[in-house]
Length: 365
Image (tube, rainbow, N blue to C red):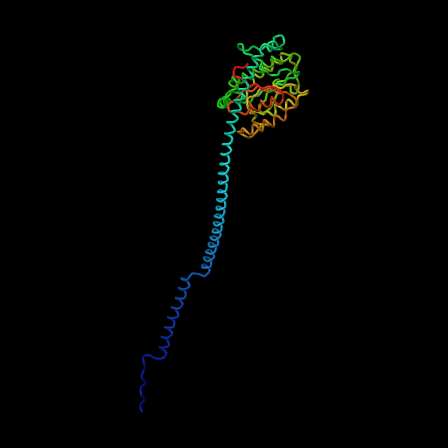
């Protein structure tokens, strides 16, 4: 019996296995490629952590800046409050100064009236002096003088000053105010040269007054002349603390020569002038003061640019304390514009010490 021929199939199990393996290989290939692409496209965790830390640092810095800004704002608010308080204090001070200025103006008017009354009394005294011309003329004979002084015309040179005494001290104010009677002219002349200062009419009048006073000295007596501004010094150098003889006319002439060549300058330290009287030994028995106003300083130097009227009165009172007691002070005042207190203050000084006071006119001596 013949065998049946076995039929052959195109696809066998072995072929399916090969196809499955092939598809599996393709799928595995795509999975590997996809994993690599995902690894390359996604950012690395380390980079994200760095960015996070950077953002945290920036946030921290921002918070610090915010705190500093708040503190600065608080400081500014406190400074604003302090400034407002100071402004209110300054406004109150201005109001007080205005009130004080108004009171001072009223007080100044009253003082002007007193000065006018005093000037009236001075004129009456000058009239009384004229009545005594005959008696005084006998005392001014040329034979009793150590020096000769020639004035202009027939004016009377004896004005009631007490020129007697064994030792006479003359104190001459040579501060810048001696350049003129008016403040504007004083400031203008203060900036001029030395020759212009020496030609100032007021200063030449002061020197002429000293010339007249030295002509009235009693023969055989002694004298000393000091000039002062911010400090006091003898007119004749090297004569500090010693008395000079009136009979030595060369010394008197030298003193006048030095005064004529010394320009007025600086402030007025009246305390230094009065200290001279206390330092001389033996002390003077007569002081003649030539001044034009109240003191402006009590030390050799000062940083102050201006001095009020009350401050000048205080300086005057402090300076008088340096005067030795029992010595008459004769005052020749050369009035200056605006210094109304000077006449009253120096008249009081002359009265209390037993001296005399004269307000010098423009044409004396």
